[in-house]
Image (cartoon, rainbow, N blue to C red; front, side, top):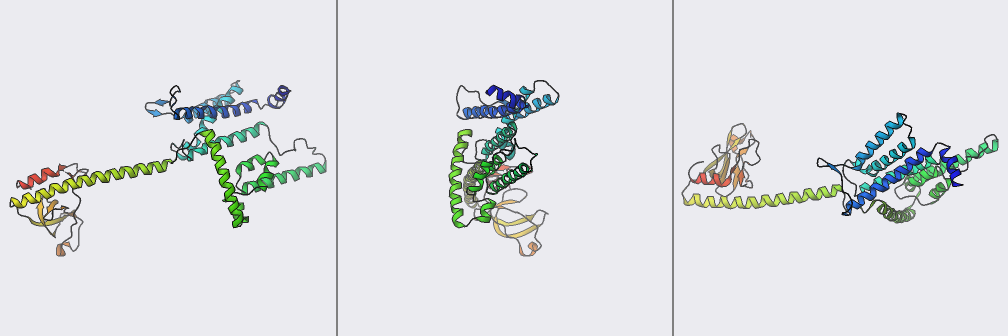
Length: 372
């Protein structure tokens, strides 16, 4: 009996390729999701990720190739239509399993953002399943259109079904709305149940008490949905990619600040020793002048020792490190300029565009020997 029904409704109606496409879609998704979960669990006997030249090959890559090949062969009139449909479905399952990666253009597979791939697979499965069974509004496939009363019945059922579908969608239940296109019973459930708190229906119709009930119902449903998605797709990581990246940047910045603070402390100790030795050796301090990028010189209130022949860096009598390059000042020639101390570095000029750098200790030793 089942075989007769299959021959009449599936094979005879030419729907077998579509059914095989659906089977390939579900089977491909189930197989690849099982594989990724085995890899994530680090099962020793399970093959790992595929790489080529050090590049990880995502399975969406193979899915796209499979869809292109099977699609092109079907357009070319290759007789194995059923096999091509199944292969196309497998490729679609591989691609949709990484739908979230295509959407966000980054690897969010195991994050909560990556769970949109499960939604994409479910949506594709439902739509394809509806195409397989050639769904029409319930009860309309045996309507006698010759009778006026029947025609009005058809119009009434279609309008009622459309209204239920629209109400269900406005209540924030897209899955029930999609299902109600074929099954008005689903539309009745969606129309009678509470709307989601963020839906247009809730904003238009609900007061504080109903919104509170809707929020409680939505939280309970969200927990059940999370359990279902976790069962299908695996446990999501606690943080998304953005949070992980922000934490890594913050950690790197903190480490860099700590390293620079340690470097500045060591350089400050070297400068303090230099000032002590310079005074003991009778090395006279002199007024320090700042220089603009255009070559002008300006007075400052500082006294100290220049460290380089260009006289652009110096150590003050206060034991601080100064860069004497300043912006051009319209009044600097008259009033002088103020130069603020800077954190010293062990390598002077490190990272500069001209590439010239020298250890601070070398500059200080040269200055003590009388060579600015």
